[in-house]
Length: 251
Ligand code: SAH
Image (cartoon, rainbow, N blue to C red; front, side, top):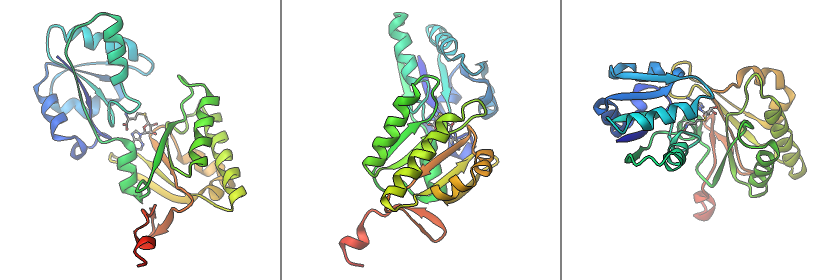
């Protein structure tokens, strides 16, 4: 059996009970080498590979799962920019008949939303700014569509040392769009949410553009950025997207 397990952001209290039980029960855990520290406490045989070795990792997990119970671990939720889709694709391609079960986890958007206040309390869109597997033009088109729909916009994989252009172009698109409509969008930034080193900032797109260097030093690949919609506010020092109760019931 192959379990594809989301473990949340890493902190022990964010593992779901199901993922905890599965990881206790399996014979082998397969994961990215950077996540080893989060699963060592299960004292299992562990197989890791580095970044960009996803295909090798998944194939190894599928092969071993023909003989024993294996957990392939993703951070957050395995079906949200995780390994779950690749597992199904390779299982079909390699004609592997091993039963596959996905175990959901707490995704970065969810943990970041709670840390910031309640920014995702209305319709939202999630876009990854990584152009490793998706062309930059497709990413930017999706960002524009999110703005056009006045969705709250969650950005995964915002910025790495070698990938600065997607972030710079996205920020510029958001600023320009807001300027045309007279909106300085509220932006929440969460770094290392739910794990050691957790930090957050609440600001606006205008402030980010005026202090780009400062924010580009803060934001990294362990950071999620949430851009509010035109109605998002700062309330009690937190980032809040109202659902509309007060307007509807004239409170
Ligand atoms: N499957 C993961 C996402 C993998 S993509 C999930 O569901 O959360 C990796 C991106 O997720 C990172 O670049 C970052 O944008 C976000 N992320 C992952 N862990 C995070 C954390 N602890 N705090 C903030 N953002 C995080």
